[in-house]
Amino acid sequence: MMGILACGGKPDAASPKHAGQFRVALLTPGPISDQAWNAGAYAGLMRIKDSLGAQVSHVQTKTPAEFEENFRQYGTQGYDLVFGHGFEFQDAAERVSAEFPRTVFVTTSGGRTGPNLAGMDFAFEEGSYLAGMAAASVSKAGRIGAIGGADLPPVKASFAAFEAGARAVNPGVVVIVSYLGSWDDVSAGKEQALAQIGRGVDVIFQNADAAGLGVIQGARERQVLAIGANANQNGVAPGTMLGSVVIDLPHALLTVAREVRDGKFVPRVISLGSRDEVVSWTGSPALSRPVPAAVALRIDSVRARMRAGAFRLSSASAPHK
Amino acid sequence: MIALLIVAQVLRISVPYLFAAAGGLLSERAGIVALTLEGFMAAGAFGAAIGTHYSGSPALGLGAGVAAGALLASVHAMATIRFRADQVVCGIALNLLVAGGCAFTLRLAFDSSSNSPRIAALGEGLGSGLAATFANPLVWGAFAILPAMWWLLYRTRFGLRVRAVGEHPEAATSVGIGVPRVRYLAVILSGAIAALGGAYLAFDQHKFTDGMTAGRGFIAIAAVIFGRWEPVRALGACLLFAVAETVQIRLQGSTALPSQFVEMIPYALTIVALAGFGGKSAAPSALGRSEG
Image (cartoon, rainbow over all chains, first blue to last red; front, side):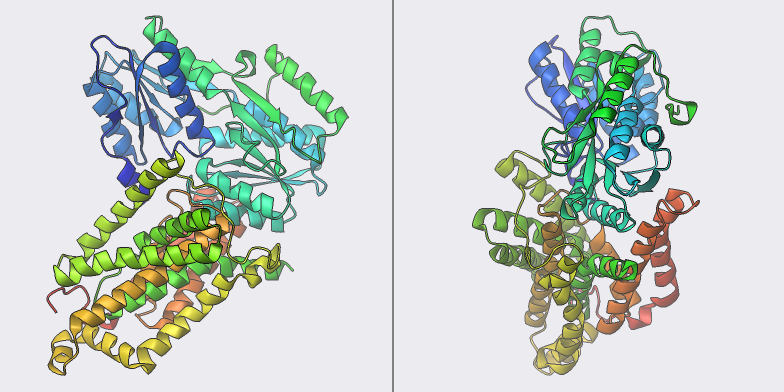
C-alpha cells in the first residue's frame, strides 16, 4: 500500500514538450513489471511512442483519488489521449473528461462513453473459454481453480467462461473460484494457490496481475499447472504454464491512438476480441503434459468459429456492463 | 492430511507477523512507536533479494536483509531519539521512503520498477511440498523469536533497562541508565528482527516484488497492541490473525458467502480484537514521548 503512495507522484513526461506533438498518457493500477495486465499496456504505450512518434507518459496509481488527480494533471497539460487501464478507472474518467473536452479519455475496460470518453471491451471471455477447455482436458483430478485479484465484473465473466469451456470438455469438472482482495500481494496469491491445490486442484487460472505471480509460484512449487492472463506469461515458469489468455494490448492501444491522432476517433465502446485477433488462447510449447490432440482440435474449431463471429457464449459468461 | 496442510498454512502466514511483532514489541517497550515495521520488512525483503542475487548465497542475502532493516532503523532512531522528531510522522515518512526507494533501485538495477530477478531461497532443498514449511529455518526462528523476546525483556539486564526507559525515562536516567543508548539499541535490533519477516516473504516468492509486505507491518502492530505489549500474548495474537486469514482463504470458493464478505474476516477480527482487548493502560507509559 505504501509503494503506490510513493510511486503515485506527479507524472513525469518522457521528453520535453513540443508544440503540436501528439501526446499520450497511461495510468496503470499496478506496476508495469507484473508481466501481465500492466506490462501489456506499457508495451502499448511504447509502441505508440515508436510507431506514431508520440510523446508519452506513464504513472502508476492506486486509489480513486489518485486516478482522478492524475487524469486531471494530464488534462491540464493538454494531453491528446489518456488511457485509464482498467474497469476501476471509469468513474474518474467520466468526471474528468467533462472538464477537459480537448483530451480523449479511454478506459481499457468498461462500457461508459461520452463526447471524449470511450471504453474498451475485450472479449477476454472467448480466450478464457478456450483456456477452460484446455484446463479440463489435462486435469487428472477433474478439479480446476481460478484465482482473481478482486471480484470485478470482467474477472467474474472471464471465470464464468472458463468454467463453461471446462464443462464443454468434461461436464463433471469441479471449478473452484477464489478472490484475493489484492492485485499485488504475491504472498496471498501463493497461499490461495496452495489452498486450492490442497483441495485437489491441479490446474489454476490466475487473473490477479502482480499477485498472480505468487499463484504461479505456488503452482510451480507443487508441480501443478497454471494459466496466465492478459499477457503471454508462458515464459514466467515454462514447465508450469499450460498457456495464457492473451490480450494483445499493444495492438489495441495503438489502434485507438492512431484513430485519435488522425482525428477519426468516435466515442463508443471499442469491442475487440478473437475476430480482431486481440484476444487469444496461447498454449505453452514447453509443456510436458500437453492438451490431448482431440481436445486441441476442438479448441481450434471453437477458435475458428469465434473468429468468424459464429460462436456465442451463453449469457452467464457474457460481459457484465 | 488436510489438517496438516491447514496447520502449515497458518504457520507460514504467521511467520512475517511474528518477526515484525517481535521487533515492534521491543521498540515500543523502549518507548519508540513502531510504525516503521512495514518499512523494516520491505527493507528486509529487498535486502535479502538483492543480497542473494549478487552474492548467490541466500545466507548472505539474509544478512543483507537484516543489515538493511538495521540501517533503516538506525535512521529512525537517529531522527526520533537524537533529533526528537515526531515518532509517528517519522515512521510514516520512512515507510514511504523505503517503498519509493525499492522501486527506484530496482529500476536502476534491473530495469523493472517492481520485480527482482529470481533468487535462490533459504532452506531450499531441505524438503519439498509440505515438508518445505517444516524444514524452513525461518519458520522455526519465527516461533522462537517471541519467547526469546520474553527472555530478553524479563531475564536480562538489557531487557530491564528497555522496560525502564519505556516506562519512566526520568527514573531510568536518575539511576544512571543512558536512555538514548538503550533506545538506539532497541530500535536498531527491532529493525533487524522485523527485517527477517520481510526476508522470509522474499525467499518464499523467490524474488522481491513491489508491495509484497502488503500491510503486514501494520497487522503486526495490531498484534503487539492486542497482545498488550507482552511477548507471549503477542505470539497468540499473531497466530489468531494467521488463523483468521487461513479461514478466509479456505472459505473462498467453498461457500455461498460473497467473496468480499469473506475477505473482510481478518480485518473485522483485527478491529474487534483491538476495540475489545487493547486499552491504554497496558501501553508503556513513555511510548511516543521523544523528550524522555
